[in-house]
Length: 273
Image (cartoon, rainbow, N blue to C red; front, side, top):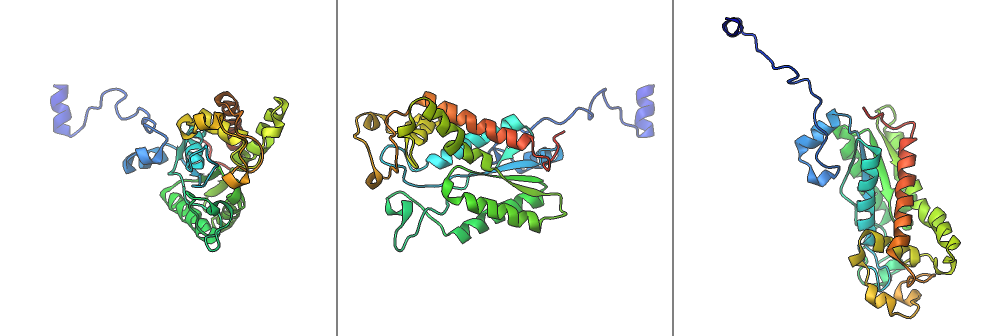
């Protein structure tokens, strides 16, 4: 009788709890692994922070593959996003300024390096950030794994925050992530008696980080049997040969912790539900 009345009166019976349960979180934090509807739904649930990892394709001496910055930025951004919560990770930017092409300067003096002009790089970052803003993201985080363009990341953040004033969206330049390498991580290595092995590029810290994050990108057999490499081989100071995965794990954990702390204490960031 009740069922007949419901049908005749045009009233739908909704099982208890149906339609009121909170929507599930997205199946992954990785932008490229989600459908557009999953991203749309994540935004509606308050996943309004997104990290843009910035890597780079450059020579890193004879023992580390040229994609090291891309891999590190990608892997560690995902760790950071999962710890911060309500944060997605956009595709990693692999094309960055690495030196001149005519004449060839900086890392462009070596095979395997890809470089774009700084102005093009800034426009690329700005365009990526703007496309995320108009979709509904409110905190766009620039995380760079390479030192040469940190000033560009900061400049883009400043320019976009000025442009976006009053929109409710902002860019965060996550300098705390990169600062660890030459800061607390280098201090850790020095305390371990490895200060002489710390250099500027492709040194013990670079190599240890890669051994921890993706060891197959390090030509470890050649590394262990090498003589001390120098600038002519693309190693600028220090010594990569004492590098270990255990040392690298400490550095990676430091970078993740510093980035998570910076984002969790960002007073201007979106408040997660």
